[in-house]
Each structure stands twice: as C-alpha cells, then as structure tokens.
Length: 501
Image (cartoon, rainbow, N blue to C red):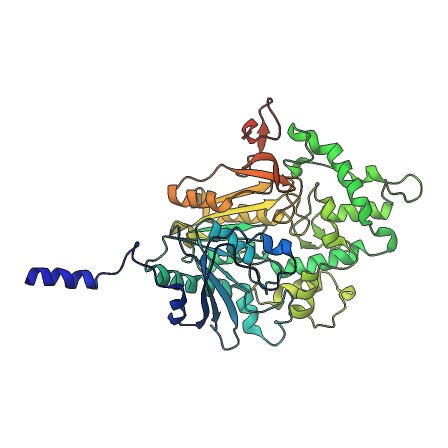
C-alpha cells in the first residue's frame, strides 16, 4: 500500500506531457501574463472566421478553408506607453507541436490575418501582432518614443515570448519548435530577431528585408524628387511595358530559356540609350532626360553633384513594370511618412530634401532602432538557429542588393559556422515579396522546418507560378549563387526539367 501511494504521489507531481487533455479554449482568459493580459478567448468553428474590417467578399474568401481554432487576443504593455495587440491562434485538433509567428509589412499597424490563417492551415499554432499601434502610418511616432521601440523590434519579441506561454498553457506542453516568417518590414523584423533575441526562434524566414530602413526611406524620397526633377524627365507609366519588353528582348534568352523571366538579371547589361528618341517624344522611345531617369533607377542611388552614395542598392533589369512605386508622381507613402514623422515634422515638404545631409540625418533620427544590419549572427547560429533569406530579383521597392549585401556580410563576419546555418534564395521574376511573371509561390517554412529537423540545408525549393488560381509553371528556386538551368529537353514550364548549378 505504501509503495502504491508513493507511486501515486510521484505521478501527480510529474509535469504533464504532450497528449494530456488540452485546456478549454474559453478558459485561456485566466492565463496570467507578466507584461499584459488576455482580452478574449473563443473557439472559432471551421470556415467561420472573417477578418475584422474585411471590405469585400474576396478578402474573406481566403479564410473559408480554415480549420476550427481557438482565437486568443492579447494586450501587451512592456512599457507605460505600450499598447501591443497580439493574436494567438491555436488549432483545436491536429496541432503539429510547433509555433509559426508572422511579421508585418510597411509601417505595421494591422494584424497579419492571412499569415495567421496560412500557418494554422499547416498545423501550426500561429502568432501575429499589430506592432503596437493601429493604422498603416507613422502617426504613432511623434511624442511616443516607446512606441517606436515597439514597432522596431519589441512587439515581435514580446509577442513571441507570450505566444509560447499561451501555447504551453493551452496544450500543457511547450512547443517543440518556433519559427518566424515574414517579408519586407517583416524581413527586417526577422533579421533583428536573430540579432537581438537569438533564443526566440529555431528558424527564421526573412524575405526582401528592408534593413537600414531610415537610409532607405531618405534615399527613396530623394530618388523620387530626382525622377520628377522636370516634366521632361518623368517616364510616364505607359512607357514601362515598352522598356520592360526591350529588356526582355536583350536579356531573356541569356539563361537558355526565353520565357519572360530573367533568371539572373545581374548578367543583363542594358543600355537605355538604345531607346533614345531620334525625333520628338513618342510612346515607343525615351527622351534624353528619360534615359537619365532610367539609368538612375537601375544604379546605386547617388548624389549627382557630389557622387556621394545615398543607398548602395539598385533596381535590377526586369523590375520596370513596378517602377511607379518609387518613381511615381510622389514618394512612396511609407518613405514619406517615415521622413515626415520620424525625421522632420508632419508638415515637412519632401521637395526640400537635401543630399547627402538629410539622408545622414535620417540615419541618425531613429537612434538605430530600424537598422537591422548587424551581420554577427553567431549567437543565433551557435544555438542551432537557421536563417533562410529570399528576395525577388524584380523587386521594385526594396533593392535585391539589400539581401545580397547582408548575405555576404554575414558570411564574412560569422565565417564557417554560417555554412549550414544561412541560405539565400533569389527568386527570378518576382516583385516585392510576391507577384510578377516568376515562380513566386513556394513553401519556405516547410523547407526551413525540414532543415531544422534534419540538419541538411536546402539546395532548392519547389516553386510555382499561378494565373487565375491555376498553376501554369513550376521551377526550382536555387540556393544562391546557383541558378536553375534547363536540361535541354521537356517542357520549360516543369521543374523536373531544370537543375540547380
């Protein structure tokens, strides 16, 4: 009897393990948090979720295939001025014992619902945040230095720590793996996570990362004033397709396949002077001033008077259809917002920007919070962390050079230990994070998960292109510096007929 009683006590005192009955979703409101509180916890039936403020049926349609999940909403307050909203979505069945956290685009301010849905469909517990403010603008910055810290990196870290607490409370077991997956601003968030908080994630996907954010804001604003320096210098949007086709005519076949995609646009040397009008301005040519504008768009951004480098990145051949994002009638909204409300004041006139002085002023204005360019990831790599970077070669907003530069810097600083901890995939024909004629659809988290679990770095990732929701092309994405080469037989729209080399 004494032995039986002793065994019972030991069993009662042992921590509960995977397979124990989960806590009821509605009981999650009782979970205590060190830096915030649970606002709500509710079970959402399969296909019943509609994103708040969904403005049309199409916006809600992508959530109809969601499985049932427990939706937990949180408010985190790591500082007296913080108001970080977080959502953690917990599958009611089929959880894979892992977390996938999502980042944000632009200036944050919204919940990444589509990313949460994608993660839950794949069996993950998912976490997302609004980065500590509402609205995709920089209104939160003036007078609120702590909110800028939240946006820069603290919201992602606090979300991650808290999500692990919520997941552990719900399933009565700690998650076996934690991954982060995002692009653009989210790509910068990804890099900062690896730099500042190497223990948060086992694997990180960083897409089109806008690191050195303040320099990018200032350089893009100045570039916009340059391309709009006179009416004669402006390239009208209806000329973009003509320029793009000329680039394809010159360089498309360099990779052995004429398919409307430049596999490696760094090999394409296109002289815009070949498009110069011989007479007056016409839709099928460029004026002399427009030639200079096109050359500025595809070169590192420099002060034309002093030659000072304002930003090392450039937009590559193949990106012409998206030039309007930076070279439109006015600066990109995000860059303009950042300069007005982080560097100057809300009434700042961007036409008055001075180079290089105001670029360097911008770099200092945020005290390094939005930089994210530290290449020393040794702490993250030494604990087994894996970093999978990717970038669209046709990105017209964040230069592909930002990823190429970071990849080289990390390898230079970390050395051999980066060999099986870092991979970069340059995506031919893809625009900013997605879109374009290239194979922009791929499951990078699945590749990352396999890498973390097996220790074998991916050399290729299956990718596809879709038209009207139908796959019409597949290709392998190749680990840089390899590119996909056609083997010479079979359809050029099928991945099996390509190899990475």
